[in-house]
Length: 183
Image 1 (cartoon, one colour):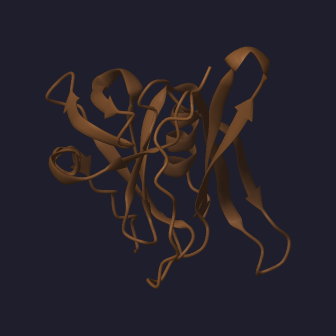
Image 2 (tube, rainbow, N blue to C red):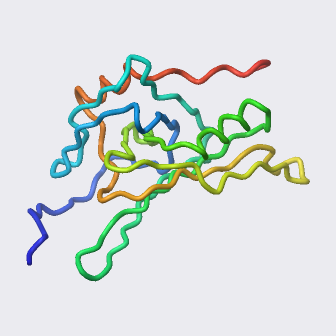
């Protein structure tokens, strides 16, 4: 059986390309409705189940956030992607501890803003959850005092691009990150 679809090729690009993510947006998976366009690789519509449906903003420092989607392909047509969004937050405090505990217990949808200015939606068909969350304070001045965490989930699809009207609808659902006292 041919499952290949339509090929078009991939050309090289003369534009800059920067790795990493600069912002992460997280929402309760059950509060968000998306209409995925899997053949186009995008989200064609996004709405909230309630007026309170919100994507919360997590601002990352330079070069501490990444996202990967790894294909697992088995016999009998089994294939899926494991999404992993790796983040780091400096300075341990009670508010960050409580926030990361809530994410680790919940089922979330996530959007990343990469360093090329592109928005990617994770969790269109299945939720992600916080895993491998670590609070740490190293012994040297240059060591991390803060948190690392991985949002992980499995999906039948790679992350989907947020563009056009769906991107505008998503941006209307964003709540900015709180400013920390003393910052």
